[in-house]
Length: 78
Image 1 (tube, rainbow, N blue to C red):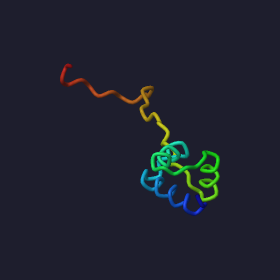
Image 2: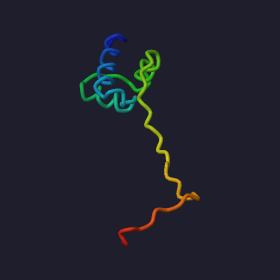
Image 3: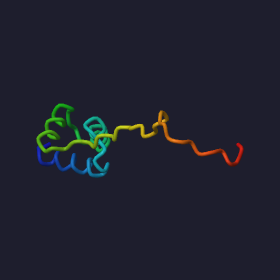
């Protein structure tokens, strides 16, 4: 398979996943679609064309329990 034909397939799978698929999942999808390619060649094609998956957003704790602010009174007596 030529470099351009492979690139078309890779871009289609990457767009279909809305950019969330990296090399392992793209490779799995290409094999399902009967496109024969090795993982090193796929990695090279993706790097040369700047195809990367979106990084997952890091979980950040936003609750601060150790504060000196006044606590609201329990008006419901629960």
